[in-house]
Structure formats: C-alpha cells, structure tokens
Image (cartoon, rainbow, N blue to C red; front, side):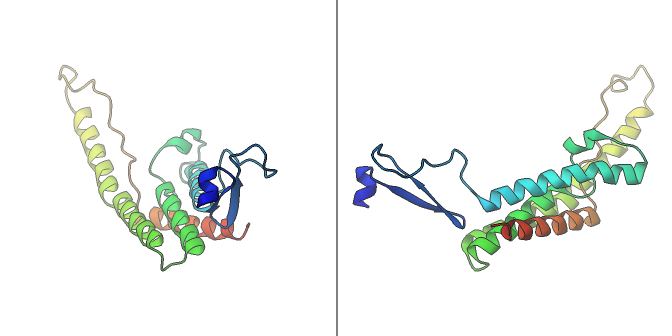
Length: 179
C-alpha cells in the first residue's frame, strides 16, 4: 500500500492476465495499455458483432435478398441481445466462478434481457404492425394518413432468443480458451 502511494509500482489484476503500470519514470516496466484486456467485455462485443453479421445471411435465407441494413437493426435471427448477455455470463462464469456475486448479477441481467426481447419487445412490434395497418386504411385527408410507419421488427421469437443464447455461449467459451 505504501509503495503504491509513493508512486513506485501499481499492479492490478484484470481478468486472467496481470497488467502492470508504473507511475514513476525510473521504473523499467512497460506502460499500461490504453485498452485493458477484459475477457468478458471482449466476448460480449464479439458475440454481438457476430450475431448482427449473421442476420445478413438469415435474412437472405428467409427472404432471398441481401440486406446489409440488417446488421444495424434490432430483431431478427439470431438475437444479438441474447448473444451479448450470454457470452458475458459465460465469460464471467469461467473467469470468476459460478459462485461469485458478479456471475449472479450477470445471469439475472441475461434473464431480464432475454425475457424482454421475447416478451415486451416482441409484442410491441406486433402492436406496431397492427397500428401501421390501421393507419394505411385511413383516408388520405386524415391527419395521420401521412405519418411515418412505426418500426415493426423490435423483438424476437423464442427461437431467435435461444439461437442468440447458444451463439453467446459458444463465443464466451471459445474466447476463454484463446487465453
């Protein structure tokens, strides 16, 4: 504690690797990287990116057309939200242990996110679809007839959520083994 206060050497444990930063110029250790190695964060970001990228191919399979905009949209197969939180949970569980309080927090977060994706957001999208149909039936002179349509693809079916969760588990596990 005294050495850290004097500015000699500060060492912190981040994930499975130790990053050491020196605050004095006389030390020969290398400076800390700008972006610390954080396995759970990297796993979550990779799973999210991979799920969003896969949406291009699942859209092509389903609709027989390429749509690169799907990479930035919510909804669709697989659920990037589910992939993100399950990759985070798996990485935290493997790194910190399944008995840790951090793992408990991440699992609860994952459950809430996946429930929301397949419940609230799915039904909000279905309501938007019905409202768009109603507005289309308005006569042209109605004030709402020229309103912009609501986004309909907001949530996920249970299958899309499960597919995202499986993808997240795979990414979280494989990222752990690249250490």
